[in-house]
Structures are given as structure tokens and as C-alpha cells.
Image 1 (spheres, rainbow, N blue to C red):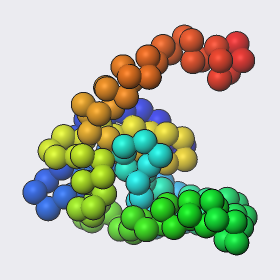
Image 2: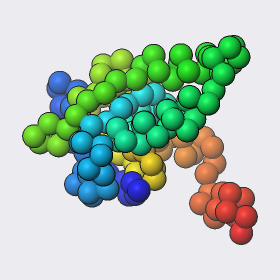
Image 3: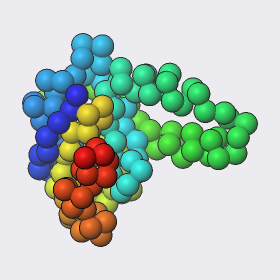
Length: 146
């Protein structure tokens, strides 16, 4: 379970350090490996390898590749996907196409999102919250049925 948020930077090669507070939630089955792809918002989603395999088994494999919408989703979701393993300094190399998709330059906002980690351009994340008029109290009431 990934929780918390962190601000980090991207090095000139496109590597991002994964915070120790998030790495501690990696299972041994993940083998320090991640699959990354574009998120449903303008961010990068990182899945630990074992979580990715679970997502594929429980969701993606259930989609009907003969249904045009479902086949299109699979293509769009997987066309940008890439795998990488943490290096000796706990960094992942983010492919240039994903950095461009998320409009990430130097700074990143890293967000633990339970089964995945999201990587955002901090300004885009702030704008996302403002544009969607996100009120924690209001959304908690609606989503949690409080």
C-alpha cells in the first residue's frame, strides 16, 4: 500500500528516485521492478511488477479484444508502457515519451496511490486540484458515503 506525497527532481538522464517511505511497501515478489505507463490524468502511473501482473490478470485479461472500445483502451494503455528496475541509488529511468506526456521537466510530485505510485509535474497537479475544484470534505462525503 503506497501512501504519502513527496517532491523530488528528475536528473538530466530522466531518472527519478523512489522515496524510501514508498520503497518499504514493495513486496519481495516485485523484485524492485516497476511497469510505468501514462495515467488517466496527465501523470505517470508506476506499478510494482507484482501489482502489474495482478492488474493484467484481474482486469486487462478480462477485457474483450473483439470489442472496439476495449481493444482501443488496451492499445492506448500499453503503447506507452515500459519496465525498469531500481538502480543502486533507488532510481527509475522514466522514458522520454512518458516525461513528455506528463510535461515533466525538473521537479516531480510523487504520490502514493494505494496500489500504484503517481508521478506528476507539481504545477499540473496543483492545477488539477484547482480546475476540478477539489474540496477534500465534499469529495470524502460523496465517495465515502459519509
